[in-house]
Image (tube, rainbow, N blue to C red; front, side):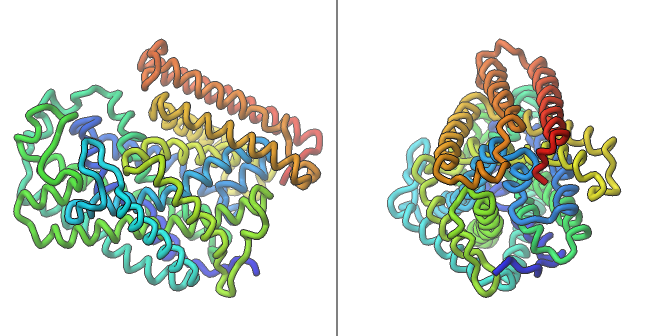
Length: 519
């Protein structure tokens, strides 16, 4: 049974907003100020604008080609299996990890009143009891989503209302009662660690992680009743709404920090209850009634995001089956159009992420770069379709699409680079594992090669791309050897991105001339 076209604009918009507003507002305000000081506000604005540019490539793609699991399907369809599998593998694993991340955020906040859930050393991690609670939470998400899109939509609308009201009220209350303008210039000024810290806060402070949640729109595109109207409204509307909320939340948080918490500088900001930063501040100021509501939201908000992203990730697994990357067994759909087997697979894989990353911040720094790498699919997939299917992309012309794709590609590469070498080398290891898996699958599953879509030559630019990103990161100023100085590294990433874009363009154009079209 195929997936049903039953998703309306309001459901799509609410899914995108719910996917974006999760654990970010609860934990990132403190993490960001420790990295960038008061300039964290700029990081939120910059992050929102950069993601809008990247998202615009997906808007054009999905409104023109509404397919299930676009994140993994577009690359395979435009560049072949060799290029497509690595990015599909990374994107699938990274998005599967979102639900565990959100469960981690819930437990981290809950540890303030249920201390047995986490350890209490300098870097708190889950206890055995915490692992059990996280596991139960993941199973419940799977059960809810197995009931179908109508049930999911009703629950999501209720959760979204809470997710919007609580952070807005908390920010307004702090701003109106405990706002200290001097905090923005205290301890070495507004930008105490320089402009570099703003860029570092994007991946490491959870800023980009907070904005990439529009993913459900891309994955559910085939189930949308009117994709040309609904998809742009959902993606751009969600990003704009959430950017305003995040900036307000960060602004109020900085202004409300007690003076004594800044005595040792922004990197060492601390106060009683800072495991749950917003709840800690509200407790200090005596707003016990709002703290209770916030602790409730600290469960509802991340859980809602986990619920939404689990729906989206099930479509990614479904698309992986269509690409022959996973057994077709996992494409099984219930009578109400739910890919329940894909849900179960993702839940099992999600459990494993609690083991190497037993705390929220451990997970975010690594996975945000994997998720951003998955968004490379947008500009690089759209580039090919602009040449092969330009008539279907109207009213967007090649003169608009190619510059947009180049800018979006540069942004993605900068975001990956800003995460630092300690993160980038781990991504490269994942890619190597992924290609070992692909070669093993190609030997066992002849469909991948026999279908004529393996396209090693067409996708060979990926090898140079990954090597280039790794080398620039290793020699760069974000956790590397700093042989490429700060400032110069931006130019290097820009030039590198354009070279790779042109190379990929030439390789796909040559395949097109030879009749090796995939679409």
